[in-house]
Image (tube, rainbow, N blue to C red; front, side, top):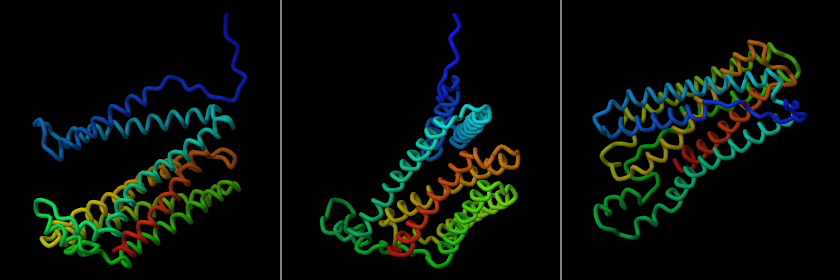
Length: 288
């Protein structure tokens, strides 16, 4: 006896290979990264990492494509759309906790660094204590917050304005304005990445964090590169996210009523903006 068609607003997804494929690819990529850094087992670290990374990109493309197909088939009912919004909110909340760990470490060291110098331990603690007697540690030449970091701040704030413009234009049916706003946002995201890459090159080339006097103060460099580097990675992901939205907009897949993919990308981009404001204020200015 055939089952009756479901009379509800929920969407039961078809079996999908992408969670398993993405998990395997991510595992291969991380193993490749470790082998690359440590030179284990005689394997080609860059090759293993590249294979895993390609698998991750393939999974992202396939998974996003399936979700887009579901939305165009009408599977994203109002109830499902609410669930998608809750999922995006929870994802951004998890990202907030991710960056909170780096800020916690940075604040703990910058506010209480002198406490570390009061308890001598075995080894070269005297050298490390001397380095940590001030923050930033002795020997570290910090960046000028009012040059490249300020430029990137302006770039991200402007990109937040353009993505809001694009979103509002789409809501009122102004597809030309939405297209122009999205193009500007993607271009500004790429410009931010280029400026940050130049900033990293300047740090490494000038040995600002890696000179002999700063050898015992590596925690500052670790926190700096982890916090700003992961933020830069999020900018790159957000730029790709918005680029996909731009192609979908050009293909006529967004309407003033249905455009959650773009809305989620805009939320993510605003989150990236806010994190950078905290990084600029505390890492570059107040404790820099």
